[in-house]
Length: 362
Image 1 (tube, one colour):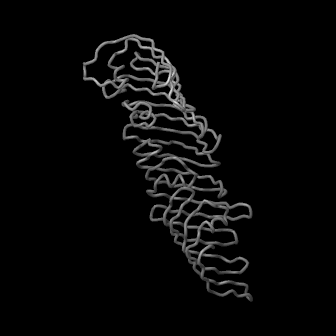
Image 2 (cartoon, rainbow, N blue to C red):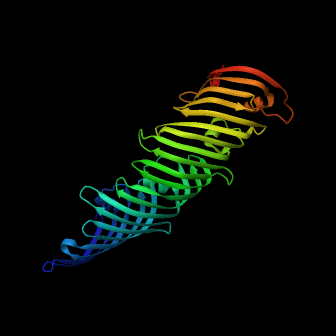
């Protein structure tokens, strides 16, 4: 191992046996796991060893304290480990970490690969670190995670499967009180089943499907939700930050991770605009390549917009707004004009073409 090593003991050449004890300090643990063709581990370790048995088939039993451990991008912290190496190619590991992580694993080492069979139990670990240990990750993730996972197969591409429960979940600023479900990861594809997000003890999101995490691996996720507070959805806030109310939302996530496509329906009987008017609302839209294609955007069966809005490189809209006996209060609220109750009255009809940059709209 790369580090400070001190060994004492006896190697009996007559009996062809070995009995040696030793210590290794400040060992670079990547140098240990590189032996198993696993290169995504960082940190240092202090170990004590007992090496004994026939020279041609000795066993190694070690105890270790591992410090400042990172797996891929995930911070694990400090771990204690018992390791047993025998039969020339089998390593058994028992890990405990600050009462937050427990794992048992058997590694079988072959000349061209290493096989692993492991069970990992998590207790109040940050979801970002859990996810980042499994996959290289650039997502903004947070949440306190409990769960149990099985890991089987080649160490460089195992099957990871298990159940999890996350409190204070945060994914790219979508916040839920809890999240739970079953997932498996293999060949850089996440498969999720019975995934459920509890937004606030009232709104619930359910999802199932697969998500490829590299290149052109496809996305195929179905989402259904009930009683979601629409103002808490990041995409709504970023597009038009004066909307609120409970909504039912369904949709699909398609395409791939570098070019996703979102197909969405939102339906609300309690759609509040600018904290001033309460309406009924329904919309169908698709978002892809920085372009929002709105098939319909219907408010109270009075205001109906359809068209395309492009957000990059510059914000641009091309569409039509048809107004049938539309209440002026609704229009003023959409335009973020403040007014007092009953101060704005009247209805109007119109057919409006919208074309151009948002800042220079015709």
